[in-house]
Image (cartoon, rainbow, N blue to C red; front, side):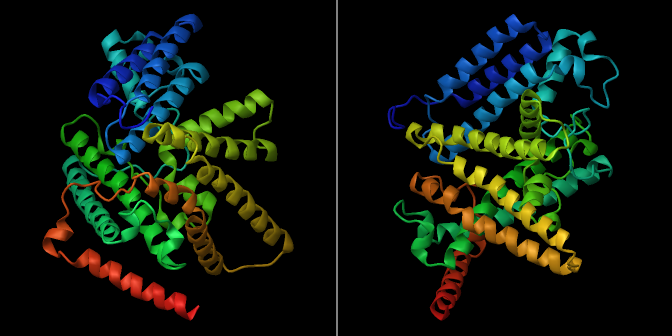
Length: 396
């Protein structure tokens, strides 16, 4: 079924039904027969969503990813855990099973939409420190942070709009030489990073301002960027935290099913590859919604991250066993260069096919402050980058 004749997805209605349906399933805490019926109904709803479209490739991709996250969450929360009996929040003064049904529904919605488990008994590893400032100070800080991320995103998008790579469907990264693609990859990644952080900052400010949650419930969306001196640390400490509940939870269950003892080499690397396979499958949901023929296009990029981490672990192990003492600063500089280089090397597996499919991420924000205040800035930056990189390629 092509994207041209698929029906339009009623996004609000779909998310309302799927969220309330999943929360009801958790709140009822049914026996296995009831859970089979409930999860089958929810999966049927999600399957029907993949037969629809939003009429926009970028939104299709994001929506498809989110639906797949929901699908894996349903499996984790209903079949690998029992949230009502196993999970507790630090402000739970009454056991969830003793709450009235509607309050238990709200409790279940909080579980579903707390992927990092901040303040919960299942909080994921490496979550950034929790804020402790007063309410309105936190709100001002998050609004300021949202504006800074807006400018960051705006600059990245202005550059992309001025680069033909992001407007022509017949171009790939290496069609612009060997140096310019690095700037294009960084602009692409910055758009994604900036959009997630801006939305998170705005949500944090709104929820705290209206008293729905506390500042301590909203640690930074990313870990410290200074920690990304290996590929493993980039994904495990800085960027991948919003999916960690799924990747770690399902990965550990997979190891348990295979009888692998926790802490062993086999368990560690099985979890590594299972985690990135899950991440790849989540993004395959985006492929599927953009165009069913693209299903699987995102997968290689994510499984390659596990391969890269295996490689870097082997190199680090060899250096340590050799007894060579590498100064910490030098080791970190080499690590930063390796991590950035690797992301640029593997990016074509994610970028090339998505550009050809119209997933360009150049209009994630409808209003460009940079284009209004300094109309030629994006083109000027793109021109300077082009001149610099082409001269570098010529010398090389």
